[in-house]
Image (cartoon, rainbow, N blue to C red):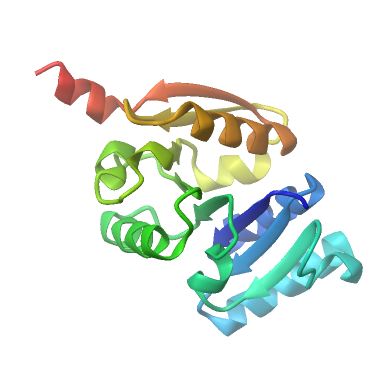
Length: 187
């Protein structure tokens, strides 16, 4: 069975990630609490992938769900596509941490927030990673380098899974330690 990726938020970034992950051979569970947003994502992905790739419960393809719990139940990787605001990210990380299996890696696109701070609010700081890219560059950037931020706690298994994921999407991952964590340890 292909690796399972849960994408939380079916807006433009979530749709693009779902498309790229399905094309990369992943099983994708795309979640959004807004039925209209999920419907638009479904139509977009139907046009891009064809109807045979949608609604797949098993195997590569995209299934649509309306709860975070349904999205992350079997996820190897969960990526949130909520606004890059502290309150939104904290809320979603707490929900993902509570509902996803312990093996699930939590990834978040953010250019402003510290992954060390977000990870410290979970029971899995070793399985949290930041995608240090603007949403627009993520959606347009396949074939380029992507910067991922880790912490001193990030496990080698987490790095390997995220490297494999972005590699199959056509990116070349590079890594740096969270600048906020590095700064704090210097004092």
